[in-house]
Image (cartoon, rainbow, N blue to C red; front, top):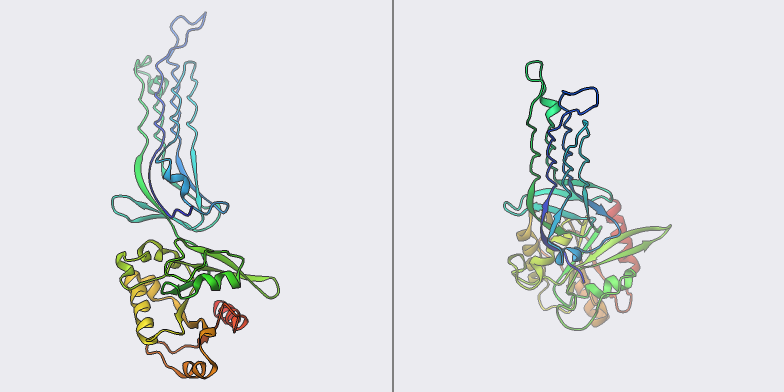
Length: 328
């Protein structure tokens, strides 16, 4: 199951208390203060891990707490530091403050860490407070409390190319043909209910990644259909491949709607490089195909690609163009 959103609470460990103790040696009847310091509490650390692909684990566990520091002991023995808790998340996870929804960390690289909550500082033992005028302090410092906060985790797939189109535009069929991904494919809208990520092999052992998200409908940026839930997954892509079904009755309207939804969702998507394509070319004859090649789409002045994933018509040319655009 693909889960790309979670809200959890994290708490770092409290610091251990400082100790009140005195030297009790056989030949030192009135020994000085010997209370050790408390150990610092453990930190809460998020770690990006390439072996993870979903936030599923956070559906079942909502609270993560690091260990507190040990209290100080006698004979100037300091308490042991509390153990950190390492929370592993997939690469591409962003962390937001749950109150403000401000992004506080972006774990976009394998091995990248973020300390979400710092452990409380351990208290000082009474030995720390000894002075020439106060040689036997009978008090120590309590440990500081750890931090506690609720954070939102959002996973955004990291891909080179994002496929954008209406439901049933052929995105899943395309990614299954050009990569090893095996999404569910059927001839009805919203077959794709979760994002798919595929690796496209190019010549000379090169490759690039493609993300397929559920189809966009008008109003997707407001939460209609499945758009709002998954549009975030194409924010990290370098290129957007706009796919319009070649049998559509109004290419211009389809293009305008898709661009409108992308722009309305975020400024990031509005500024991304876009390639326009017509899918399912096997559904029209050669004469109709020539007419499509002559069509001009207002608002787009780049190269238009036409292909059929079902028959693999112009698929090598499509891969070549995507690679060239990525290289540029």
